[in-house]
Image 1 (tube, one colour):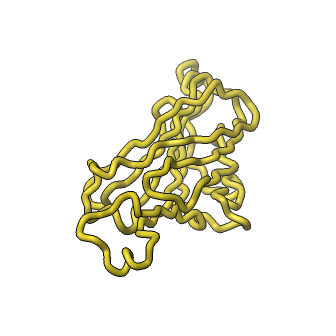
Image 2 (cartoon, rainbow, N blue to C red):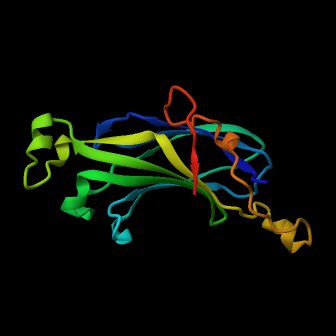
Amino acid sequence: MSSINITNVTVLDNPAPFVNPFQFEISYECLNSLKDDLEWKLIYVGSAEDETSDQLLESVLVGPVNVGNYRFVLQADSPDPSKIREEDIIGVTVLLLTCSYMDQEFIRVGYYVNNDYEDEQLREEPPTKVLIDKVQRNILTDKPRVTKFPINFHPEDEQTGGDEPPTAEPFDESDVNGEAQVLLEEPQKLQET
């Protein structure tokens, strides 16, 4: 059983200009006290063909983590457009929110992001060079892709002959509480990978 359950993720300031910071309000519950911090990361996928274009936008440690409910806002700068191929700026890409404990990733929430010109004329007749200050991003919050990974939240128990290693948990939509909690008005079905 997982010691941490994400109960809500709300995307703030969406849609927004491409150059605006990303903001996610994250709520989670801790079922067992943890000795180490949680590491939350936000990763922008710059190109589907080349993972070297991925940009780590933010990495924060949150702790101590005792039993209870928690909420915080993760804010990250927008991706550096100079590190993205010009042809990959406009169109659909992916944004990944991950959480790890002791260098073990246990959950990943993926969102499609659509980047396009807000101005209809620019959409119909795009300039040869991308005008980044005219690009708007829209995080598609209605169908996040949630992937859970089984990890050992208490490796010290293993060393002292305690609990057995964890087994894979079946996906349980209630762990993400319906809304996938991403600024939705009503619960949506999540897809597991």
